[in-house]
Image 1: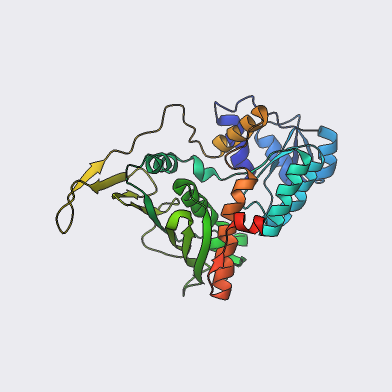
Image 2: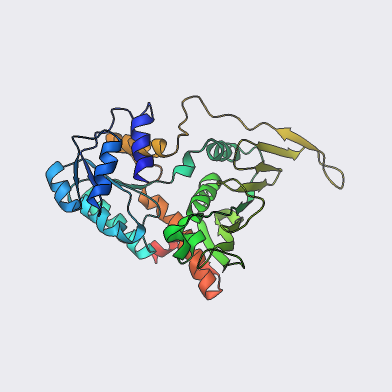
Length: 338
């Protein structure tokens, strides 16, 4: 993933010259050195000890691209050295750990944000604006299908809850963002279908309750061969006056009722406006740009940890529900006030 981040820094016109990379850290020194060579970072310090490299280079920012189990220590180390931190997803290995990192960032007076790059996809942002306009009336439901036969090899093949923990957070965060609602509760069934090349949890079906009586359903599999969806899922989004369909790629269409009589109402197509020319839809580059702007202005990035923990709660709530076969409350606001 460091290659994706460094590519965004060096290739995006909006980020060129905005960040100077002064150090790269990896448990395997040769990996850090190879990455530095690949991107021409000859002046950057490389090492295997994050604490030592931060002490030597004294950076303003830490880009945290480690495995989830190492995240908490890396974020805390960065905050202790006075760094703002931008982390890969998921933001923590548990809700309690996520809450502790939020508290640590607040105590340090630093920004901690998460790379939810799917928010900065053209279709996702167009849908959010379209729904907010009221063109389909009041939102009632979002339904999505994610079916891809992904043969990664490596660590994912042996993960617990591989689909929910490693991929579904992108879809869950997109649903929450497009709806503009708070996740309240979830019921989830998880399985590892016959023929799966994963050890555990390659498929899941979940029903989420959002605020304002909005329902979000998710059907997903990482071992479904024969008819793949987009990596962004295939969506049906329903309002009181009509429906929007999105294939997760370029096909976006919406229809709403055109009259008030008949067994099945006549429909009319509704235009889904394009984004403004200056709208940011460049994945990692957009997340990084938003993070930098928040630091410079004293604002709050869109993917701030205090917001992103709601998406994390959807993931761990779904996992708990699958384990217990019970409906699970995931309302972070209620948890904070309890």
